[in-house]
Length: 463
Image (cartoon, rainbow, N blue to C red; front, side, top):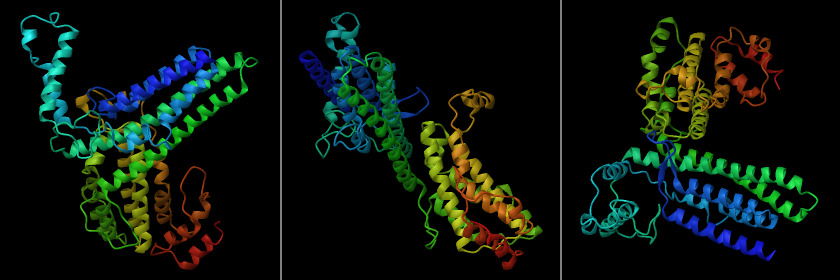
């Protein structure tokens, strides 16, 4: 017991020390070199440190050591603690991407190294580790001469002094935001992996030593496993919240109940387009309205030109992060279009319904492209290669978000209200967003050739 206590104390002290070093040295790192997908190094480092600490504790065959170290690892990832990974991600530690500085540093690494007088005279072992260390030390001294402390007395992304910063470009800002989101997703995955590590220990080691195991120790290890699983869910919730915040910052917000905003952000511009759109069309006006160039310019281009969407479509976000952003965007687009159509009581002919269906399909395809990414021939990847990739993220959640809008366009394209009953739709079906009975009635009444009596006869039996 005494040896176990000493070991646990030493292990947790070492873990705390190494984690603090990881915080101090935190910076954005690329998950895959050359792809521009950044995560804060502190998340990767903390996972590596926690995993190794738990595995070493398991190797001692002491349950007390396992749950003591495990408890400390849980505190490191716990969202409710004052310090730890959760707080570091909220503070943006190690998330500031500066592409210009990264390019300069790469140039220094590939160029001729700065030599000190000692190394020029042949001292230091002829260019081994000592020379590399001295070169890095010289660079640090040069940087320190121009560095100045932060106003709040501490660094945001590691280090004792703030580096001399350039003005961040728009791309730097977006990549920094995406780095934070990628880090939150990685933290959720790390908690799941650590929870699985405890589960594996309980299934393998715990089962074999059930008779000799202390029930309290097993219970503590089980608690650690469940706590890490709960932390993983908390990071997923944080990812959704932060994605909403970033979308609001780059895409704007819309309240269909209020007056339209004068804004250059894509969502207010989309709202303005739908407000001005006419769906009471005849054959001649439909030919003009359904033009792809017109729909592209009014709906799709405003979204494609958004810097956030552009960077995500170019593959600068983790797949699950891209899906989270696309889901929230899809939900907002559906609310804007459906809410505007109902609030303004737009009048529809069958051709107008066909136009809306076409617009919705284009928007849905665009949101799916945000998730799946665009095929770039310059990357040497064909569409068949991408289709066969194991890393593809399902776009089914995007289709689910558009379900209410697709259902509305289906209703508007009916020949008569009674056809809705024959189609046997299940309102509020499991796993999909469906229109409510009162919304179905409101949508039907938008058709210029549907009588109120016919609509009432159909909608009276809906539940």
